[in-house]
Image 1 (cartoon, rainbow, N blue to C red):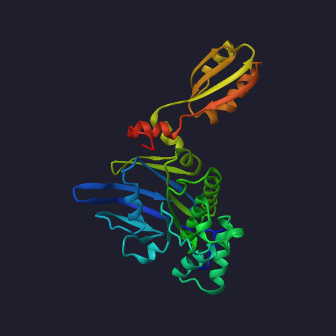
Image 2 (cartoon, rainbow, N blue to C red):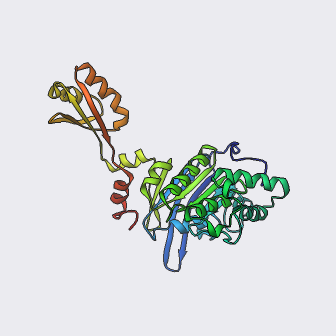
Image 3 (cartoon, rainbow, N blue to C red):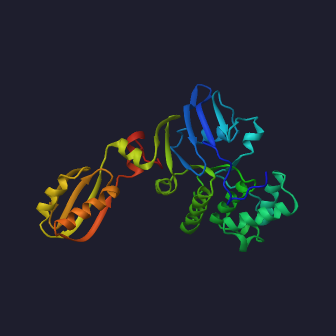
Length: 324
C-alpha cells in the first residue's frame, strides 16, 4: 500500500466510487432502496439525511462491512463488497465512534494501524510522520491518547484511516462533539485531502459543513436518494431565488426600472434608501448590477447578497431539519 504520498495525484479514474442500485433489507424493512451515486477523484460528496434515513447502512455497504441484497459497488474500478479485499484496501473508513487505543501514544497508534496495512521499517516511520504533520499532531505525537482532547482524538482517528493512502476516505460525522477550533482543523484536513486528489464520502449533522466542504450532496430519506447535485443545483430545484440589497444614493426608482430589464432579474423595488432585487444566481449577476448602478450615476454604500441555503432544500425535501 505504499508508493504514493498524499501530495501526489492518484491514478486517473473517472470515478473512484460508483454505486448502482444498492439495496439492503433487514427483515421486512428496506434500509437502503435502489441507491446510485458516484464520486470522482478529488471530489467531496456529502451524504445527508435525517436519523434512520439509511446513511450509515449505505456507508457500511460501501466499506464492505455489510453485503448488499442487490446492486453493485465499484471502488477504484474494482468490484466492491464484503469479500472483495482489493477494493476494500482502497478505502479508509473513519467511524463516528473513535477507534483508538487510549493507553498508546499517537505515534504508537499510527504505527499499529500502519502495520495492519503491511507497512514496515522506514516506510512506516515516514508515513507516520506524514500523517502526524497532516493532522497537526506532530508536536503531541508522544503523548498518550487518553490525555488528548476530543477534537485531537478525532483528528488522530482520521489519521489512522489515512495510513494506507486510500483512494476513498469515508468520514462518518467526524466533528460530532468537538470544540470549534478542532472542528475547523478537521474541516481544513478534509479540504486538503480533496485538493490532493482523494475522493471523500462525508456524512454530517451540520449543514454548514456540507455547504463549506462538499462539491456535491446526496439527500437520503427513507432509504432512497431523493435528490443529488451541487448546492446551486439543489437550490435551483427548490425554485427559490437570491436577493440583492444595495444601499445607495441616487435616483433608485429609475435604477430599479433599469434593473428590471436585466436578464436574470425577477423583481426590483425600492424601500427607503435600498434597492432590492430578486434574482437568479445573485453572485453571478452582481457585477452586471453594479455596472448598471454606475452607469445610472448612483453611488453604492453597501451590498448584500442573500442565497437560499441547503437547510431550506433539506427541509423542503424531507419535511424535517437535518438534526431532527
